[in-house]
Amino acid sequence: MAGSFALGGASPHITSLLTAKGAAGTIISIIKDEPTIDSSDLGGKRPESVHGYIQLRNIQFSYPTRKDVQVLKNCNLDIEPGQTVALVGASGCGKSTIVNLIQRFYDPDQGQVLLDGTDVKELNIHWLRRKIGIVSQEPVLFGLTIAKNIALGRPGVSMEEVVQAAKMANAHDFISALPEGYETMVGERGAQLSGGQKQRVAIARALVRD
Image (cartoon, rainbow, N blue to C red; front, side, top):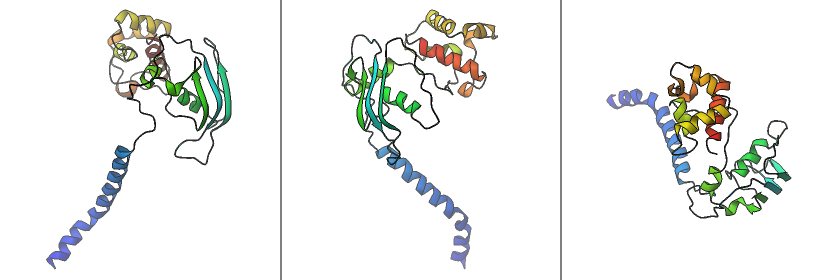
C-alpha cells in the first residue's frame, strides 16, 4: 500500500521526466554536431583590399535539413563593384539563400561563389564576414545604449565615427531629439524604438564598419 501511494504521487511527474530526457538528447546532439564550416578557423586568404566584384557560377544548393528541395538550380549572377542589385521573387525562391552563401554560412552543393575572382572557400571566414555589413528586415539590437549598439559594428570605433555613421543612416536627428541622445537605452531587442528607428540604427552599425 505504501509503495502504491508513492508511485501514485510520482506518476504526474513522469511526463516531465520524459520531456526533459528528450530535450537533453536534442541539446547533446547539437553539442556533438561538427559543422562543415568552422567559423573559428584561422586559415585562408586575407587580401589587402576588396573591390566587391561578386560572382555566382552554376550554383546548386539545398539546405541540409531538406535535401529533397533544391532552392537554387544553376544560378548565375554577376554583381559589379558599386552596383545596386535587387533580388525579387516569391517567398522561398532563394533570395536570402544567396546572401547566406556570400557570407559563407553555407557552401553550395555545386558551383562557386567568387569575391574579386577568388572562391570564398579559400578566404578566411572571419576576414570575409568583417568585410560585409548586413541589415535584416527585423534587425537585432541589444539592451544597450544607441551609441554602444552602433559601436558594435567595429571594435575601437570613436564617438565621432558613431555620430558620422548615424548621420549617413539618417538616424542622427531622431537620436538627438531623445532626452538622453546617444546614451538612450534601447531596451531588450530594441523595444523602446520603432521599427524604422531600429533599422536606421542597424544601418548605422553596418556603415560604421567602413
